[in-house]
Amino acid sequence: MKHSPKFRSKREEERAALKNTTGYKIWSVMFTILYPFIAVFTFLFSGIVMFFSGISRVLAYLFGGRHA
Image 1 (cartoon, rainbow, N blue to C red):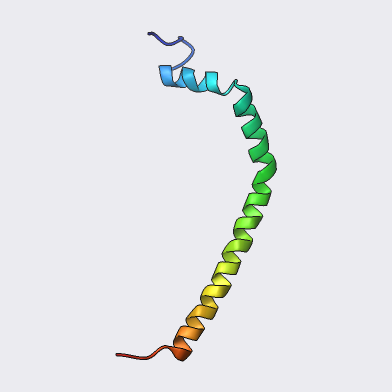
Image 2 (cartoon, rainbow, N blue to C red; image 1 turned 90 degrees about the vertical axis):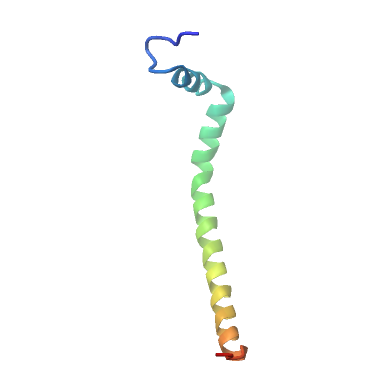
C-alpha cells in the first residue's frame, strides 16, 4: 500500500492519524497539566532518598567493621 504524497513514509502517515485520536489529545493535555507535579515529586523523592542514603553511609562508617 502506497503512502500519501504529503508524508515521507507510511509510518509517518500512521503517526499523523494517531495524533488525531481523542485518546492522544487527552493524554497530551493531561501530561502537560501534570508534568509540573511529576517533576516536583521526582525532585522531592530524590532528595529524601539522598538524605537517607547519607544517614546510611554515616551509620555504616560509624558502626561498620574495618576489615582491610
